[in-house]
Length: 271
Image (cartoon, rainbow, N blue to C red; front, top):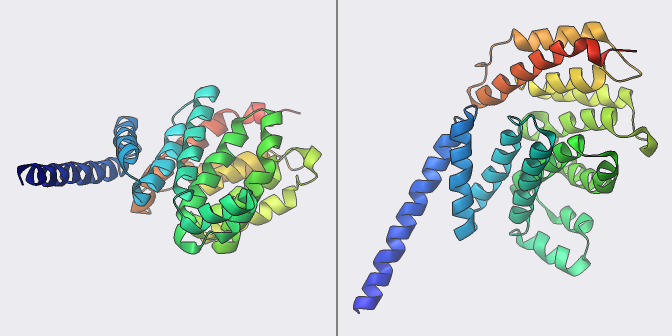
């Protein structure tokens, strides 16, 4: 009887600590534009998912890694963080019953991804987002090695909801068609602009779309639109980062990236 009572008390005590950690991690994540608070949030979430498969925390951890990588200037460290974000997303997807069963049966992720529904789009999105950013900074050979996987992940996001996370899939394909190696035959600045236009129209308050448009499309070898590059980035810099309370950290980051790009203008538009 005493043993049973002790076990019950221990369970409820651990559960209480767990809930406290979850609440604290989520609160810290709200202040993710402060790297110290973001790092602490990630540390707490890593501890939580090591003990239990909490779907919401696992998804948030993948997203947190994505944002953490934005603070890193060293390419190798940035790649390592995006790799963590990708793996965190994969861990969530593997908890989705239909996906896990299909993957085990068909032995192919490309087929299993087709079973992901709208209710698990968040896990799919952050897996795809981290992998795409990893590829952006990876070597040419590494880019090609994950190209097919990136496409089928994002194609499924497009099928489920192209407007998810502020037009995220349009933002991805805008960058994809501008930056994918020409050897693939898919590099197409016209398609890039079409996707960016849709993404910006879907969520004009998400400034990262505009920054990526300037970075990927305006500097494209077949475009080289310096005037548009300056116009878009100055619009971002002079915009109100508080226009959407949910996006203040992302918009602050976008403003800083816009400033850095403008500082690199001469280099980016060299013939």
